[in-house]
Image (cartoon, rainbow, N blue to C red; front, side, top):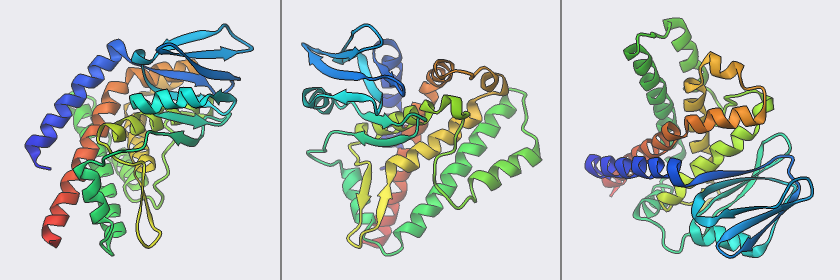
Length: 279
């Protein structure tokens, strides 16, 4: 994918993110909610013993974060699949335990390129280098933005961030907020899943040798880093409840959508460069 195509994709994503802020919203069913989701006309009907029934039109829902205490009817899940609405399931601590995403009837050319890339014996090493470079890009961009605002980042602090995020040995998502705001981890997974659906990419790719490329987990990890950098100390101090944490995350959702698109565009470019060299 060339630079012009990536720029066009990013502009489309920004327009979509702006439209979503006005018309389509994430649906949080909560880690403590016990109820059932069915379909009523062109809407989800959420019934719970502890709160009044609620109706959410399909056209107003972008993604769903659901606790394990919520039962889903087959019809409701089918409605999500038809409309490209990802569902992330979280436990009582807010930790994602699974997800529902529609099957891709026809993978994108990018998805086909990723599958070809995974045939390389050195794909994991190359991909790991790309992940580290992407974390470094996110850190450098944040530092540049702070500098431009007249809020320079201390050199020692920046080096510690690089050591922690670029050279760490695990790709597990960082926790940008404390345990009281655990559902934010599910919300980040949902944003990442939504981006993968826009690019017609699977959440997980498998190699012929049984290896796996977990794009959903890795993209979520990168978004968690961006969120951690964007969340100011003052913002963190006010995150005492789940509702406050979700409000803070939604305030930054536009930047997170843009970061997801920028990251996938960078991966597409790198994969196609490698395949061009290999062929």
